Length: 53
Image 1 (cartoon, one colour):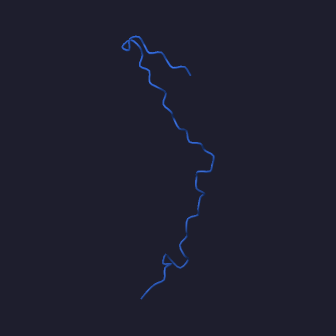
Image 2 (cartoon, one colour):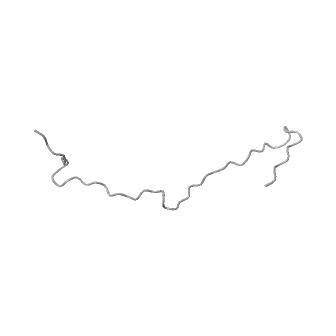
């Protein structure tokens, strides 16, 4: 791409901003973590640690 020429009088010319680089997310399926099942509570309740007296 050729550089744009400088305007002779900047106040007459339109303001030219350089293009903004936009990084698009590439969806290959490699980045997302596999879905893990939620841990279920034990059948006898939420206390799974050993109880100490």
